[in-house]
Amino acid sequence: MLKRAHYIALGLSVFLTLVILNLPGRITARMKLGLGSLYVPLFGLANTVQQQGTRLANTVLPRSELIRQREVLERQNQELRLQAMQTEGMVRENERLRRLLGWQPNKPWKLKPAHVVLFEPSNWWRTVQVDVGSRDGIKVNSAVLTTDGLVGRISSVSLTRSQVVLVGDPNCKVAARVDNASRDTGVISGSGPLESGTVELGYLSRTADLKPGQSVWTSGLGGIFPKDILVGKILDARSEDYGMSAVARVKLAADLGALEEVWIIMEP
Image 1 (cartoon, rainbow, N blue to C red):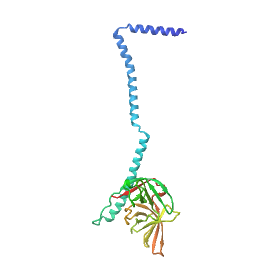
Image 2 (cartoon, rainbow, N blue to C red):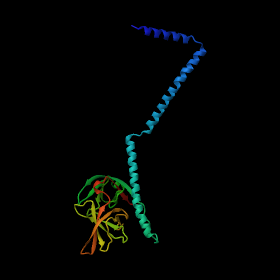
Image 3 (cartoon, one colour):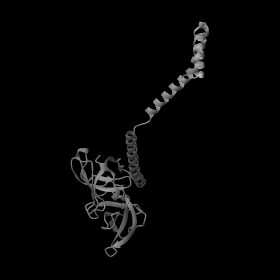
């Protein structure tokens, strides 16, 4: 049953409808215009919100795309750090040779990124495998490094994978140079089964000026490792062969126990 108030409201609605229908055309048009002016801003606001939503949807990238872009930026950052490492060595070389004639400047490294897919930790047989091989142009004895420093060299190559023998393994000898005034040179070898993060720089002159904190770089001798790749820093030194030579312990710059991505220096 409808209440009295409902009857009154219904009657008023019918009355207003009849009044509006019987109004002159000019007055009806003005009423339509007035009512339309009330709703136009609402329609404009709705359209603006819809456009902003569309723009926002186009701006927000999928998570996978963001991850891909981050990986690209990280790789570019690593390439810049490696170029900076080489540039530092070239600057030092230029300073030493700038007064000489006929010397050839170092060429920029051509680098190939690779991911470590198999890690075989051992103190006397340290190797890792990477996910690039002969189809990628990898060759035996190519130098391997990270943005921190030298890692090792390619020891064997298959179609899709390569094995890397790490610095400190008996099969990875490295001709190195101490960053000091006398530019003392020697050969990097392993330092023992309990010190995987350090190596020994031997065959040094007994008069070598060795101090803790001095940087050790590849010397370029031997034909495998290009010069000016950072190996590490000297921890301490001692004499050997009854004082006829010296040996320095070197803390490696690259963390060989936490390798994920490495860079291989390709032939020019």
